[in-house]
Structure formats: C-alpha cells, structure tokens
Length: 116
Image 1 (cartoon, rainbow, N blue to C red):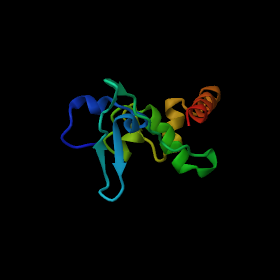
Image 2 (image 1 turned 180 degrees about the horizontal axis):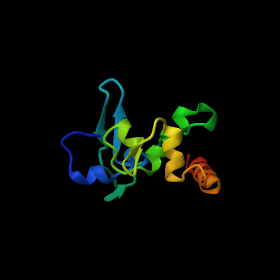
Image 3 (image 1 turned 60 degrees about the vertical axis):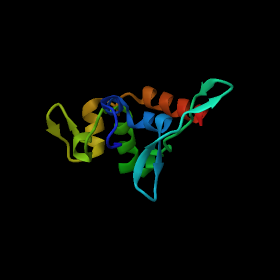
Image 4 (image 1 turned 90 degrees about the horizontal axis):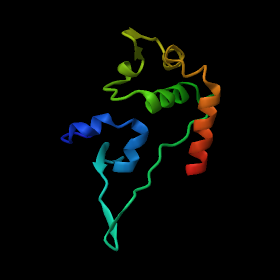
C-alpha cells in the first residue's frame, strides 16, 4: 500500500488501485496517478489488474481474495477470516463462500473481460 497517503487509500480494494495509482516495477512501489485535465474537465483514468485463469491455482485464489478483502495488511491477513487463519488461499476463499458462488465468479470474470 502506498506510504504517506491519506487513510482513505486504505479503503480501496486492490482491484481499485490502478484507477488512482500506477505500479513502478523498478522502484517496487505505487505512485499516485497524475490528474489528467482536458478542456477544463478531469478525465477518468483507466487501469487494470490482470486476469488469472483458475488453472493457475494459488494465484487465482489469491486474486479472488484481493478482489473482496478490504484493507489487507499482509498475505497472512488475506488468509484470515473470522479470526481463523486458513492454511491456503483456496480454503480462505471457501470459508468466505467465494467458491460456492460460481455464478457470481463467472459474472465478475465476464464483466472484467468486457472492460478490458
């Protein structure tokens, strides 16, 4: 999470970060996006979080958690639900009921595909 920024940043889901920040790989940190103004109007910034195919296992489950867990401070916290630390991201997803909502998961996947 970006350092030295307002507490409101902590309210963002990971999937919302590209709207307001860019990832600088060489510095391994998030930088705030510059506001783009055209003809006196602020333009909406586009950003994306790459899709992950379910066959990639751990990465897929991690991405599902990043889309729904608010303000995670660590990978351990992503696996924690109702004061229980689950041994894997998949089990953490199952505990949250994410895996049993196949219709919702596929709807999200299709919505992302349309946006990208």
